[in-house]
Image 1: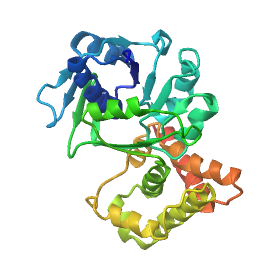
Image 2: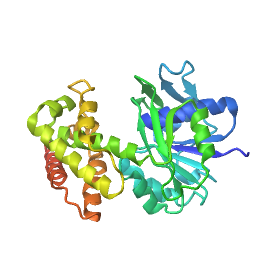
Image 3: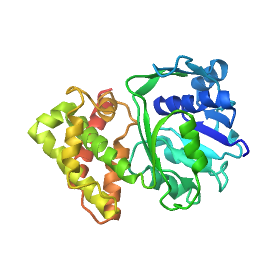
Image 4: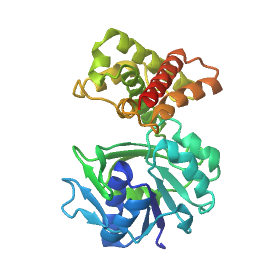
Length: 319
C-alpha cells in the first residue's frame, strides 16, 4: 500500500496532542507522510524545533513532521485531513480546502459540537467526513508546546452516515497504530450529542451567571435553566433520529457532579474576560438553528443567548 498523505490542521490543545501522537509513531514506522499546518510563530517554532508535548505518556517529548505548512494552499494530494481548529475558523478552513482536496480525501474533524459534521458537509458535500468528539485535557503552554494533564485523551469517531459502505479501515488502523485511546463506531452521533448536551447547557448557564459547574448543580434557578436547555437539545436530537435515552438529563447532572464544584467552563471564561471569539455560536446558535429547521421552539436557549450577547456588548464597551 502506498504511503498516505496525512495533514493535521491546527496545533492547539487538541491538534497538538493528537498530531504529536500520530507523527511520533510515524517517525519510526515511516508508513505515511505527515504534515502539519500552523500559523505564524507556531509555524516558525515547530519548523525549527519540532512540536513538543509535555505529558506523562511520552518520555520523548518532541516530534518533527515530514513537512510543515503555513498555508492550506500548500497542501497537495491529501488522503486524510485532520481538522483541529476553533469552530469560528471552520467555515474559512473548509472554503480553503475546496481548492486542495480531491474527491477521495477523507476529513476527520477532531472538534466538539453537534453541528460540525453538517457544517463541513454543507461546503464539502462529496467527501467522506467522519463525525467525532474528543476528550482530552491539553492546552497550549507556549507556541509549539502543548501541555497535557490527567488521563489519556480519548477519541470517539464513526462512519460517515451518508457513506456507510465506504472502507475507511486504513484510517482506523492509523489511529490504532498511533496508540490513541479511541472507540470507532458505525454511528458516533449518540456520543457526540451526549457530550453536546453537557457542554452546551453548562457552558451557556455558567456564562450567563458567571458561576460554575457546581453552582448549576446546586442552585435551583440555574439548574432549572440548564434542564430546560437539555430538554430542547434532546427534542432536536430525537427529531433527527438520535435517541439519547430517557434518563439523559439525570446522567448529565450526574456527570457534572464528578467535577470539582468551582470548575468554570471555557465559554464562561472567554466571555467574562472579553474574548470576542468564543463558543457561543457553537452552542446556542447550533441549538437555535436546528430548532428553526426542524420547527421546534427553543425559548430558553434563545433567551440565554440574547442575555449573553448583551453581556458581551457590555464587557466590550467597558474595555
